[in-house]
Every structure is written in C-alpha cells, then in structure tokens.
Length: 199
Length: 330
Image (cartoon, rainbow over all chains, first blue to last red):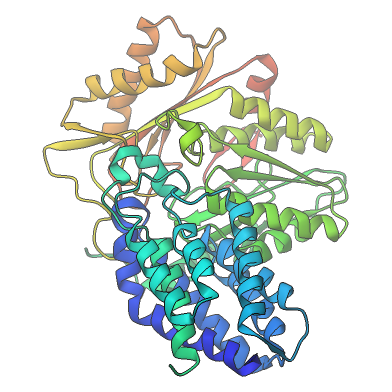
C-alpha cells in the first residue's frame, strides 16, 4: 500500500531529479522551443517540495492535489497548467483514503493523464508529454520499474516525430530529430516513483 | 553573452522595481507581479487585462494606462504568467462593468488565462476573452497550436482600450477587440537569435550570412532560412506574405516593429520599403507606427503588421492614450 509519506517522497525525488536535469531539459527546449523548460519546472517542483514540507498533508490525495495547485501557481507557461492538472486530477481521483493500492494509484493516474489530454488537446504521437505518460500508465499495472522504462522509451521515441502541439509545432518538419522536453520531464516524474519506494 | 543584469533569477522583479520608480502613475506590485493603472477601478468602465511572458517589452506592462490596458501580468521570460496573477489583476481593476482578457495565442497563455477566467467568474466578475492570432507564418494551423499572437496585440490593446475608455459596454469592447484581431496579420524576420537570461547563449544558431523568415517572438526559429537579403527584398517577402492572407479593401494601420536589437535607423529604412510595396500593391495607408513595441529580448529583425480599419476603428486608434510605451493626444 502507498501512504501520504510515499507521495511526499515521490514529489521530493522528482524535485531532486528535475534539479539535476534542469540544464538538459532547457537544452532540449532550445532547438524546438524557447529554452526555459528546465528552469520553469525547477522553480515549480522546488515550490512543491517547500509547500509539502510546510503543510504536510496527510492523505495521498491531499499531497497530490496540493502539489498540483502549487505547480499551477508557480510554473506558468503550458507546463504549469498541464503538470498541475496531472497531479491535481490524480490526487482528486485518489479521494481521501489514508492509503491506496498500486492498482488504485494506476487508475487515478490514468484519470490525471486523461485530464491532461483533454486540456492540451494532444494525442499520442503529437510529440508531447503524452507520449511518455500514456505508455507509463499502461505499464504501471505491472511495476514502477516497467512504468519508468516505458516512460523513458516513450520520451526517446518522440525524437523522430513531427510536433503537432505546443511551441515546437510551429517548426513543422524542422521539429523532427529532437527529443521532446515535455516527454523527457514526464519520464523523470514517472522514473521517480521507483526511487520513492526505495527500490 | 554579456547582459546588464544582476542574476538571471531576478531580471523580472528588478525590471518591475525599475518600472515602479519610473512610472508613479502605475501601481506596480513587484511581489505578485501585477501592474495596474493607479486610478483603477474606474467607475463604470470595462477593464482590459493582458499579460504574457516577459521579454517583449514594452508589451504588456508598458501599455498600461488611460486609453489602453487597465492591468498587465508579466510572467517569467517567455513564460506565461500564472492564473493567480490574472485573477488578482482582474479583481483590482473590475469596476463592476466587467473585465476583458486579451490573450496571445500560445498554449501556455491560453491555458493559464482560461483557468484564471473561470476563477474570476467564481468571484462574481463578468469576464470576456479575446485571442490574438495574427502571425501568417504559421500556415498549417490544423497541425500546430494555431497562429501566434504577435504585433496585432498592440492594435487590439490600443483600439479596444479606447473603446473601453469612452464607456462602451463589455460585449461591445470584446467585439471591437475581435474585429481588430480578425482584420490584422503579421510576418516577422530575424537577423539574429535572442538570448534568454536563464540560458545565457543564443536560443538557436543563425550564421552571419543568413536570416530566418517567419519567426515568432520567443526566439523560436522560423519556418525558412535564407541567405541574407536587403531591406527591399525583406519588405517584399514580409508584406506579400501578409497581403496574401489579408487582401485589404480599406486603408490599413501599419506597424513596423523592431524585435529588440535593430536600430531605429534601420527600422525607418525598412518602413520606407514597406510603404513602397504597399503603394505598388495599391493598399492605402491610414497611419504608421515605427518602433520597438512587441520585442523578443535582444533579437535583431523586424515584423510587419497590417490592420484593415474602418472609420470607427481609426477614430479609436487616434483617441488619446497615455502609457509608458504609447502616448499621444489630450
């Protein structure tokens, strides 16, 4: 079972890995975006870690809802509402249980990913965070490890795609050959699950 | 890249503090990043709120004041502001006559302003929203996030601002803003990339002998790269790209806009070429504005925006305006 502590660790591990990878995310965002994905997410997840330390919500749902709200209030750009909605809707779907099973979490995360798809209007293959999140959710039933690998594979798999959503879409054919920064940061988020459980 | 800054993390806050010092007629909330006309809310007047990433100055904060915006929300450099800022701005300027959000069409701006509009409505504020999407360089809108909002933002903010200033109701101000956007098109050219403070190096690599056609205002590369062209040749490409889409029958407003690092000497020379093309194509010019208004940090280059107008829009364009970035009449 997964408790509030686990979800707080998930957010802390994500914040640390976004810190570590911020420069790489910004570098990926330069040729096909506007060179700020790393610094924006870094600001957001640092704020998430800070607010979770301060308010210490005591259910999994409350942790993710608060984290999502904090991202919406601090990140800006498209990433703020999209990542914020992902966590907030996942948190809401978890309800107010003190502990949730991995299966319940997988189901809730699917609700969150669906909300992101609706908000941003992106489908798999559009070269967005969806390309990492959808395979991750599909593999989450199997294990955190499998979900992390699927997200990473999805992120790498955006390289040959032509962007159809977000700022990279303005480049048309020239977006081909670059890995999508949003899919890359989504893979960091999913990859952090494994470490949060101490695997 | 050398920059006149302290550290990248504080560029926006530092600029806001400087703006507050230079413009006592504006109330600048540095912490919450909201710039408001000091006399807001103005009784009975529809309020106009805009915002977007920083790095496009004087847009939007420099256009706050009588005859234009009621408030502006600056985000991080090239990053949409957050809903909290927009709701705070809406609440500060709402007189009860309603608030119009003017939103440039970028995924982030649209998502954040949509969330903010919902929250503001929950607080009992009558909300309307108009999207600016004038950039003709984005051709296949079906497969992209749609046309970007660029130079036409200035026309929308000025003309809708004048309508609001003379007391027109929210539906009318919204309709005018929409009419201006529908009547305006832009095309931009970059001679150099720009450098964001956070990254410190140019966002893309543009060799000395080349230019980029169809750029946006975020340092995003354009759609086509060519060998360097003369001002005359660039004007032909830019104006024709706009006219292919707009085909004006009425006179137009012309904005020859610098991207940030192109001297006015070059911009005026470019304007001469733009006017020549318009004359050759039989397009009558009602008014022309030349300068750095919707910029992209230190990018060199320019954009051309044309807006087809009728007598009413021209009257509103000529109406007095008093902001840091645009000021005439009265």
